[in-house]
Length: 91
Image 1 (cartoon, rainbow, N blue to C red):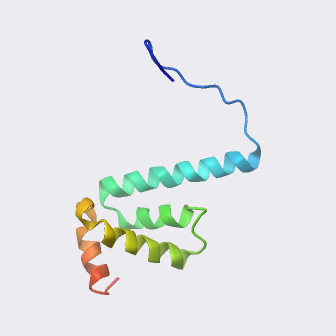
Image 2 (cartoon, rainbow, N blue to C red):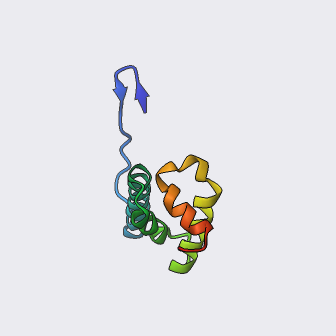
């Protein structure tokens, strides 16, 4: 919560192991996604998509990743070369 004295964390207590594991997985996925975007690192981006619990297979992860990159290419200049490869069918 943001207060007049700055941010103050909420105390959540403990999580069940399954919930804690899922939260850690999602946080790592977020971190990898941000690092990949800043660095233009395609391998990290693949790792992030593979970690996503909503994507059911590695093949689907790559397929979705490529669709996302092409659809958002004007916002992703760090991936321009990889997007050209994908669009040319050379990925």
